[in-house]
Image (cartoon, rainbow, N blue to C red):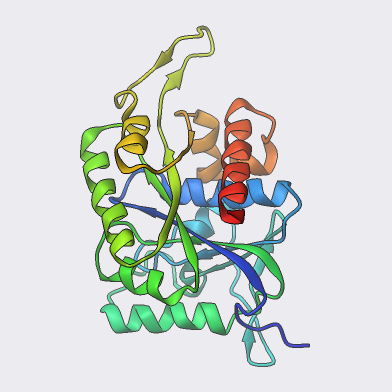
Length: 256
């Protein structure tokens, strides 16, 4: 039986940010892996056409195969993964206008053999421009997880993103504050390098749940650089436990 497309996907979770550089893709990958650790069937779609980082961060370099007219997602760490980056040569830029981006995303939704999934986690482009709007509109019943860092410049852009999704009648599940603090291994003190309490304040202001606060973790950075995400081999670390808690919050809120 052909399971091409998203007809057998139960939940769509888009991971978005008001601006770039806040660790959105890191959160998307580790959230997907945390959901998988809870024994859900999970797919990961890299919809950031202009900056597809998932191939590097997942350690994937082969090109997907085509079988019976369907694109076969690559599989790693128990996830089904698809990215435009799989089809690009190294250092090849994407110089496309909106309609081509929309067409590419439609193909990834409709022509990939996603099969039966409990969750499809979608890494959305940063910002509130045409790509984010177009993609969010193409995904049925998508719920959004917003990623921010504590500093005000990021929070200001996140407010705009939340407002944009609200105007589109797209549900925002909650906020993940990334780079929330740094904790030295020799101390219990949590150092707010990029400020403190921004995500919590934003949660209260916008009446949106704070799903979790992810620290600045060297292992998180190393995992992304080396193609072995933290949740793939360090799920029992303190940061791993935080991602598990975020995943459980997402599951509960999606069930409401």
